[in-house]
Image (cartoon, rainbow, N blue to C red; front, side):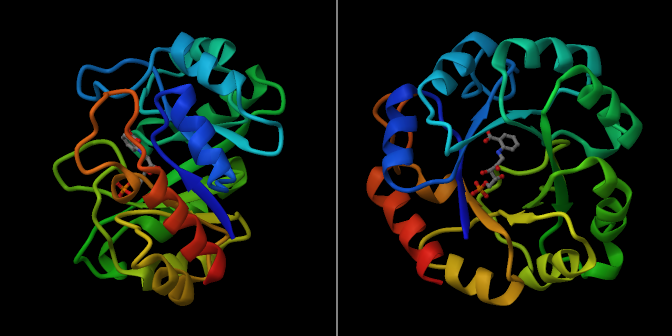
Length: 229
Ligand SMILES: O=C(O)c1ccccc1NCC(=O)[C@H](O)[C@H](O)COP(=O)(O)O
């Protein structure tokens, strides 16, 4: 079971999270006034410099501007670009353009799932079909009604929807949305994913420093719970 941890804002957090056994390190970058925690491209590059080659460097952007995305990738150089903005803002053909400009880049497309809405009233399965030819991973994540972006809600959704998406595609799927050491085993049992992702529930309750937000004991407990599931 692959374990992905967001959002890494410092080399210290990256080291702690890697020592805790995470397989994927998630760094959101390209400054956006709505997300003060996101790093500049230069800061993200510096964090990734210390990541060993057996850990995947996941760079998250919510940008919808393909030229800007390509320019930023030339600085940050992640292994995987995680697209977590409005899914309809970047069409599969545009993702092909991004891939053409960046050798060996892999794509993780976020698939939005709303809490409390039945699968038949959501577009998640259609999106998975539409984006599977340009995606190396899907990140099935909770979307809030009031936000354009997908994720970072701290809220769970129905894991049977994850199961349906996972069974519909050959793209490796990582599940996300309110996952913690307490609920991750049950989410895995229901959906049988390739990997699991956590942000909110592995943060300190009150970080003392804006760059050091990950609580090593919560990250270790999450990794252990996922690996033992
Ligand atoms: O990490 C962010 O800052 C972020 C911002 C905007 C959209 C998505 C973001 N993170 C993506 C992730 O993969 C999170 O870990 C995922 O959404 C789960 O978050 P949570 O429900 O808080 O555990």
